[in-house]
Image (cartoon, rainbow over all chains, first blue to last red):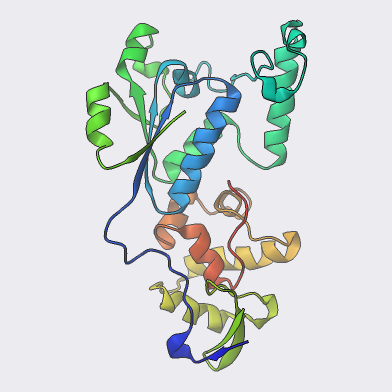
Amino acid sequence: MTTLDTTTTTIPNFGDENTTDRKIAFVLSKGNLDMAYPGLIMANGALGEGIEVHLFFTFWGMDIINTKTMGKLKFTILGNPATHMPQGLGGVPGMTAMATRQMKKQIADLDVPEVPEFLQLLVDSGAHLWACKMSVDMMGLDPEDLFDGVDDVINVTEFMELSEDAQIVFI
Amino acid sequence: MTTATIAGKEITLDDEGFMTEYDEWSEALGEVLASQIGIEMTDAHWEAVRFLRKDFLEQGVTPTLRRVSTVGGIPIKELFGLFPKKPAKKMAYIAGLPKPAGCV
């Protein structure tokens, strides 16, 4: 035990004095339930640390911001040895739905929101969401189909410009 | 662990400077802690900090930002405005509680 006086009291470093603002860009390229969450959770953590956050949705990651699919992302044991289940079981009808339900329950038990609500949480916390133009074109999506919080549909060049000096995490 | 004297009161802190003893805190102390990190407390700030105190007592853990929003009823955007950049940590610091351990 050390006794200090007020003038030397330890004050947590909240980084308010930092002159270089950290910036992270997450590229979400997968539309599986279990590939959507890691990016969303890390983005949320980064926002809570006062970091500037961008999320670029591309290819199957479009499912995360497509209002027709965002609430229906699935988890399958097929091709995922980390489930430690016999892979043949994954092909049994209804198995993907069951695995998805189970994972959603585990996530909800941790008080973590479903994908649409999670995206709103990120937007409210200051995140920028971007949709990949090529994916929109390739999948024949209408920008109207995308989650309201998406800032814009942009091409790769524009993404490279806005992510200059950012740390990039590809998922 | 260290102890420090703030506003004439001896308090226990962890290595980062967060208070570790729930009962050593008072609102007067919270006001001083806030001013140390450049925050001037208003009614809106107090609403959040009081929710943190109450929720910690009931749950035994510091609520996450999302919980302050969903259960405490204070919108996330507002929390970022009141406690800029690192709202969850700053609220916990002012409320004399440990940093929140939850991820979301």
